[in-house]
Length: 101
Figure 1 (cartoon, rainbow, N blue to C red):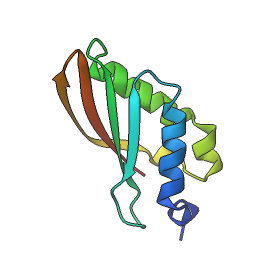
Figure 2: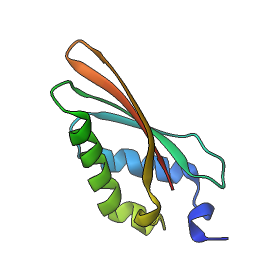
Figure 3: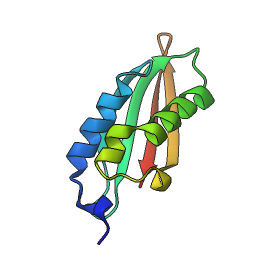
Figure 4: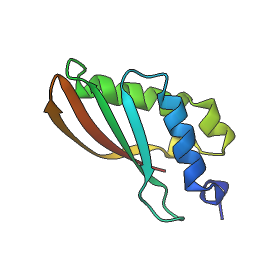
């Protein structure tokens, strides 16, 4: 069994939330897969001026360059977005992105 599946999902969620603290917006990460499949929902609230492509690029950069995630044994090459949705209100936009690795 590969190392990536031995990492507790809670540790990855906490690490991802900590990493997102450097990005504009409010982020919350939830594990929504099994122990075998690491699927995380990334919930974020950002100003509506930020485009979906900007947000996706920011998240991708962070996930692909995160030394903390690499230290946990999460291989960046296995991370990919599998779904996105958004809603707007009061000058902010709530977005959900799921990532799988």
